Amino acid sequence: MNLEKRMQGQVVVLSCAGRLNMTSARALRDAVGTTVEGGSSRVVVDLTNTSFVDSSGLGALVAGLKVARLAGGDLRIAGASEQVRTVLNLTNLDRVLTPHRSVAEASDGW
Amino acid sequence: MAGETYTVFGLAVPEGLDELHDLIESIGEEHPHVSDSDLMLFETAVIEIAGNVVEHARPRGQVKWTFTLSVLPDRIEAVLADDGVAYVAKGEGVPDMPVGLTERGRGLALASRVLDFLVHERIHGTNRWRMARTLS
Image 1: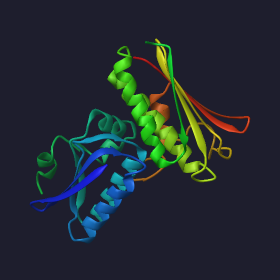
Image 2: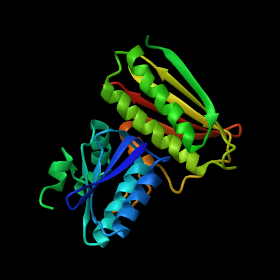
Image 3: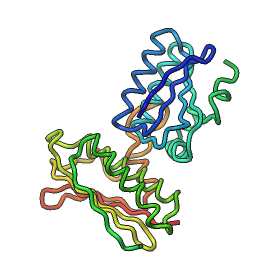
Image 4: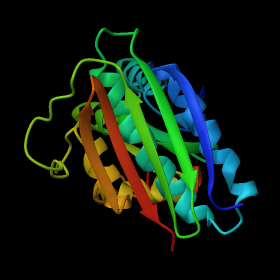
């Protein structure tokens, strides 16, 4: 998985390309942690180019969500594929990680 | 052509998951009767089972696995066999799906939701995970 980080206004966007699974979940977890420690707690994870997410990847997203909220912000997801939406739904995580269609939509209100 | 079998040999390590991904994603073109949705859900289940094997594999980094996938007219089925120490489940049956912001423990529950058959057996010193999904 390739992970890219960029600022978009007051929001940090982390773009994940490839598979977000057991081998790559740690990188996302660390990236969110570093971002929040650096003072940015409004994070959008852009999954537009993420082809697959497993339960390790979901764990990293949940961990990031908790870290961001503890710092007074939030973590939102954008551009989720059918596979990602399906696993979010099957695990009931879509109740706390609402999939937004785009980074712009996810950032709305921030 | 339905009825074909594919096999991958490797080590039960995180990097080994990519070989399973690649195999499953490659069979879609050869088997047009398998829908993208069925293939995606089966891949999701296989990777969860395999991830669980990697997590419990002892001695770490030395456990060998064999993944055998069969595409049949009405279903996809697979066996993931490894020569590691016996897998011991934490409880009876498939674990419940965790609730709230728990970070772990969703893998087997997720796999069982998209499979029609899932069983673990210990046979002749080998862990065998047998799984199947009926095609929609």
